[in-house]
Length: 134
Image (tube, rainbow, N blue to C red; front, side, top):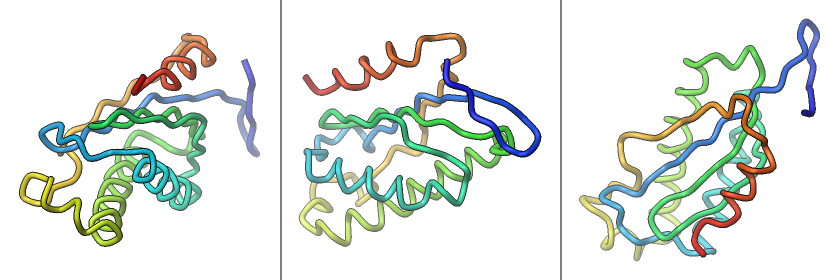
């Protein structure tokens, strides 16, 4: 296990996040997934979050990320909501044809799945995420 540290602590905190397109509309391809990933990486620093692994299927994305102890649950929820809002807005702006394939132009489902990885082997989770969409 790789431990990280800051001024006052040593830690290893990982989360597996699953975001689903509203009503599982099949709109995510490799190009859109890469753009969604880029948006994630752009805003992650503001929340002390670091992307570890990313992959997608046609209607959802899997993300493995790590956070710091000062990234409490409230901060992680704020990050996820900020990410969903920004990515939805930017994807619809940059790929206008996608709007017609969405339900009332909503990109993401309102809910999300966030799982702490706990004692799970990070490499096992990475392999699972890598296998998505195959």
